[in-house]
Amino acid sequence: MSKITKTAKSATKSLIRMPSPSAEGGLSRYLREIRKFPMLEADQEYMLAKRWREDDDLDAAHTLVTSHLRLVAKIAMGFRGYGLPVNELIGEGNIGMMQAVKRFEPDRGFRLATYAMWWIRASIHEYVLRSWSLVKMGTTAAQKKLFFNLRKLKGQLREINDGDMKPENVAQIAETLGVSENDVMHMNWRMSGPDHSLNAPMRIDGDGEWQDWLVDETVDQETTVVERDELEKRRALLSVGMEALNEREQHIFTERRLKENPPTLEDLSKVYNISRERVRQIEVRAFEKVQKGVKAAAKDEHGAPLI
Image (tube, rainbow, N blue to C red; front, side, top):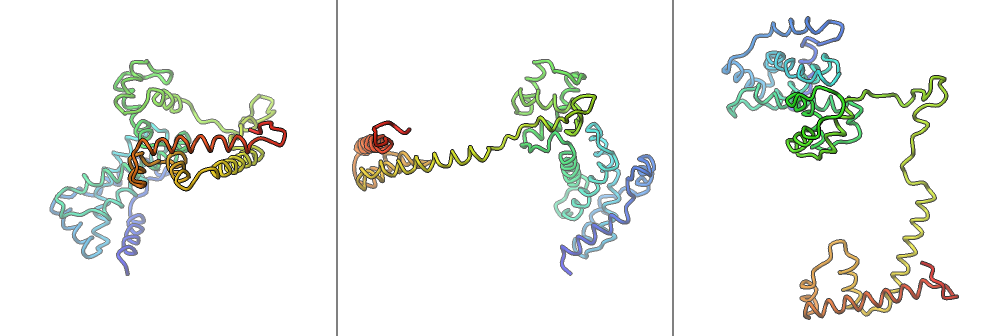
């Protein structure tokens, strides 16, 4: 049996044997149950971790996890302000705790709790982000930092209202977290307002829902076809215009005017063993030729410009 398979089985076994922070059982009952698991001394923790890593001792892994359930509960309590069930926060934290035990290396010299705190917080963070509809739209690392620190910083600045914040406090929070003031105001607004269903009626009589007024921001099919045709026409005109260039002019024009990252004049001067000024002159002359050719090709038989 592979190490990965054994690890997965150990996680499953630990989950079965651990007390569950179910809503039915009550938080107080769960906290009483996890206090029964003793805290470990440093040498006990080290030997249990060695037994797990070297011998795949499932009982040792289980003891390491259960001895830190109080730490998980304490960290999870710090996330109660996001309106999510505490039992689910603790459950996610317990998963992070098991991940920490699976990866803990006792020979590095630090305690499991120090290492596990990162895994517990990370697991709860991901759960909160998955659960909050306001952050399901895709957030950057800076926005996640703002999301998880805004309430704390508002408390430090004595901003206790859910409404608009004082401009000086907005500026201070933005500077502290490295985000724009607009991001701070927008996140504060989103976190202060409750979620609303798109199926909710717009009026009391129930005629029409909010989703009926949503605008489809995707490009319609007609616009896509027109833009594609226009692009193909412009490419054809450019191809005709470039027919007036010789081989060297085509290469310099393509490199300098059509590349996303064009080479320097110095680079091209080395290719053709000419001066940078000479390359610039060829580029300008080639552009003028192409421009003239495109304008000529864009006229219809009566001489009227098509573009």
